[in-house]
Amino acid sequence: MQFTMLGSGGALRIPRACCACKICNEARLKGFPYKRMGQSLFLNESSILFDTPEDINEELNNLNINEVKNIFYSHWHPDHTLGCRIIEVLANDKKGEEPINVFMPQEQIELAFNKSSSVFSFYENMGFCKIISSNKPIIFEDITISRIKLLNNFSYAFLIESQDKKVLYCPCHSISIPIVQEFYNLDLMILCIGYVNRLEDNITNFNRDIKHIFNQLNPKKVILTHIEEVDGLSYDDYKKMEDENPGFIFGYDGMKINI
Image (cartoon, rainbow, N blue to C red):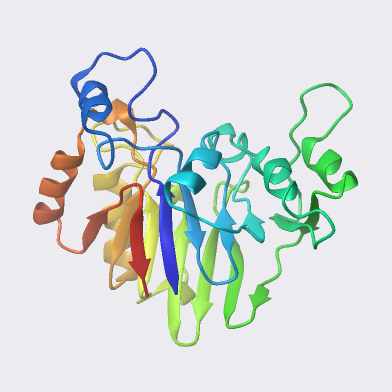
């Protein structure tokens, strides 16, 4: 399996608009990988996109992604969904072709910008996409994607399998990953890092939660994403943390992942 990390940033991008802190100024000056856009992942096999942050159009351009056939949504939070207009943008090149498949959790995600209209329902009615609301495993040729409900009861992770390889992708709320047998000894986990320098009861923390998950489930490798501006850490800081934390890799925009 071949993945591309389109964006590795958190709810607040790096650089954050109008912010003059040293991390944001460095990102403006140096660009990628110091710059981090909205968190999103692309699976080359079957052209699968996970989540659509506000800057997804730019991310797809930056990484030269030529086609998106399928989109999976993990949950409704704005930093994972508000780039949904990419469905309309992509559909413009698919006139007369099969619409984009948009995979929702069974309870479905609805975004409304007035009192009567759901954006996703509107796009489906316009023929831009096909909405598939299901928690059952989805099979694409030699790839199987299973939706895993997290313990917070509204967000999902994805177990992605191909032949004998297994990857768990949890783009947000890693603190709520269930510790179950099927997640032991995975080839790779791609996890939301949460905070490094802040400790809050219900928000993922790297030292408290991610290390606990690593020790419990014993994956071969962990790549961390959803990296937050508020921690005040630069790309160089995370590279130093890799040396201090064997088994962990801190993701960055444009990262290629082969399993």
